[in-house]
Length: 419
Image (cartoon, rainbow, N blue to C red; front, side, top):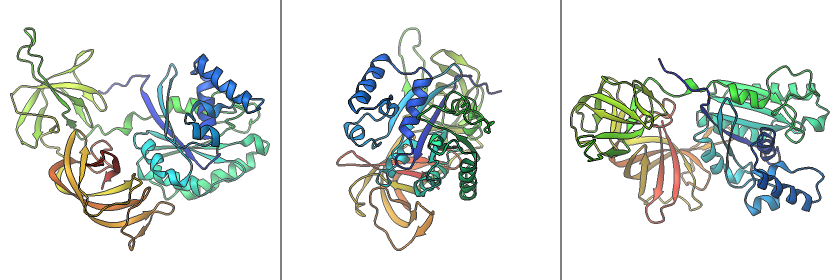
């Protein structure tokens, strides 16, 4: 039986159109949950006073770049950490501008949940749909639509319900399991951490309560056992002279001592002897735990190999189709060779063919354009120099994702989701 700790980690991303209040919302979450250090509070207070504001500009807690503060926009992905007694959180504050779509993809790639903001005055706009589609494409299982700035429309229930109805019509074509709706005012703090006394008509949870209690334990794949080996541990000490352990993070499934396993690519089989953690041996390990596995037999295993169940193995191949997001400001070069990183395995790769590009506003195919520029998303075919052990991204986000790196500059040029 898998047991989950009450203070599990929730990764979430915020997205929406420019000036919808993403950074202010995160600042409000941090401020009202008492997660701000005194020196940070003093710095933001000074900047707010310098601007002549008669209130604390909460967006400054996340907009760290000088250009961001000068323009009052988010450019880079800002990561922030905070915790409550119930759960730990990592926030990715992503940009709203169209030219920073790649940053939204980066921030959302590891998220369990996406908060999509909509300005109550403007309703559902193009960027709301764009970011929702990206969240759906990245297989984020939980979306919260926060209708923000309700203080500017007199906390109107009618306006809120109209926006919710608009979004439900649009969201009917998204592949998202769980969509929630919360009316808020990030600036005034209504329904963010504390319940608003100005929206008696709303009977749902506050945003923080929802974040603390949304069920994410079943989001991980606990069926397909996937353990990419990251490091071989050989202490060679008097106490552990013959110890040989294989360390890494479980990408899927549940492992127990005594389980029969197969090692890829060699195909040799063995049984798990023990599973060790920092806190000592365990009788059961599951994704996303970091563990060290020992086997009953001495088998040549190295970084990049994968320990799987004998009767449940991943796909293996060198010709792979992926949905690719081009991250680099240089245009795609058809003759270029790339370094591919997938789980713990490295390989060389080329892009054999671009099947079609995707219009991220509608998800329609663009078949007559085979040039990749920054922020473009396309379906492509890769050829790798070594076989990869993979699952589809929809089945397992860990074994179904990869990145491409320029060999010369070492820049990450693209991220991919295996189909």
